[in-house]
Length: 137
Image (cartoon, rainbow, N blue to C red; front, side, top):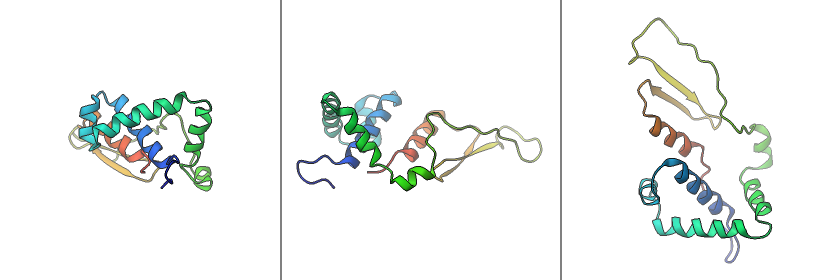
């Protein structure tokens, strides 16, 4: 935790990720905060604060510093960073089956495995993937 008057990189990363998720969620800030169990007042504070920080001279260098502190150097070398999702061709196992029997397994770079039915809600899947891949503060 940062000392009084110092910026807390973990907190800043958390709120930048939350603000990014809200923008892409299609939800209003109020709905998003209720779903994520975030204080709406804190959401608006951090939205203003991060916008202010981004306008400061040298803001880009500061953001890079915060990002760099997110992952230890050794861990960063172990896992390649991809700007777009990586896809792999999938083959079905076994014989013919009905659509209800078919499913999908996704293995994320973080090690999480998701087994999904063929009828999974796309919005829910997007929310789950975002939550699993967002760094914790």
